[in-house]
Amino acid sequence: MMAAWSDNIRKVEPYVPGEQPKDTNVIKLNTNENPYGPSPRVAEVIQNPDLLRLYPDPTASQLVDVIAEYHGVDSSQVFVGVGSDDVLAMSFLTFFNSDKPILFPDITYSFYDVWAELFRIPYERPALDENFRLVKEDYYRENGGVVFPNPNAPTGIYENLANVEDIISHNGDSIVIVDEAYIDFGGKSALELIDKYDNLVVVRTFSKSRSMAGLRIGYAISNPILIKALNDVKYSYNSYTMNRPSIIMGTESVKDDAYFKAMVAKVVATRTRFVESIRPLGFTCLESSANFVFATHENIPAKEIFEAAKKAHIYVRYFDKPRIDNYLRISIGTDEEMDKFVEFLTGYVQSIQ
Image (cartoon, rainbow, N blue to C red; front, side, top):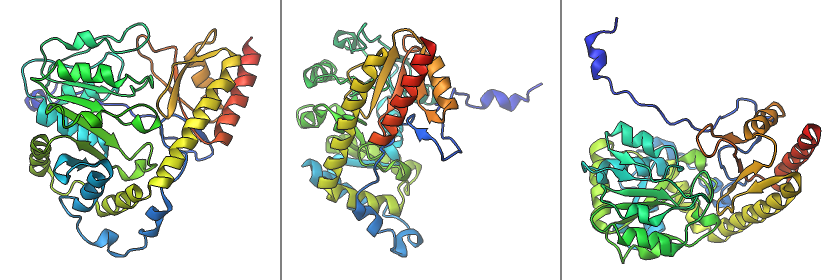
């Protein structure tokens, strides 16, 4: 029999991240990590003995300033956090405090409903259409806020900026968060709308395109009023949320724009080549603007391919969820890794047919 205090424990269904295999002798294509390392400038600062000895700057001003300069905004328009998950969680806590439900798609980043449940935020999930695209009219209704990724996860589909702006403009009384974790791999950013709409927050990450998932760096760009609100909540929770290595190495990453763009281009080129390579095997991929593809086979169930690939030490992501349970999300690795995966798929498909 449970004690009475058990009634006061907050109970939530936690987010389940992609599997992190203990075996290093695998091809890991399940968590959308960038296969290429960060800028060499990042490694150059690691030898500094004060990197770990000193407390970090609570304002992370060095990183905030370089992000602001890079995007052509004022530093008062930038908020940084421990990965975009931290930034998004802080945004939910800060901006979604209405009795009205917040809105996000039925197929989307699966942390959104976890945060909504954790913070006791009512929510509704308008369905994507048959082509897995947003139905912008579904976001015209009264709400307590809107959040969606663009490109979407896990589909990789990019919504054009006109549709994004349409949703923002129809929700002037609530905050709209556009989660752009994958925008560097394709598509036009909503950042150009920041000065036009005072209800817009754009969230970005260093984990994907900047190859720094291990350091946990994320940021939001908005107007100074909303950024101050985010910082007020952050400093009320934990003033030292970002460590010194992340601040310093993140700053160096932003400074090396040529390297960043070259690595993004390599991933995009490999993505295109991979999609073309598996099409003759009977696979169809949704049009991706991310560093992954969402693929389904004409005859073989996705779960069977997922399990067979894992036995061959190749990890991809499978979602046992309605509408997408016959798709695999496949992160783009190096050309060599993707060629090995194509070789596996070729042999596997031939053995089934």
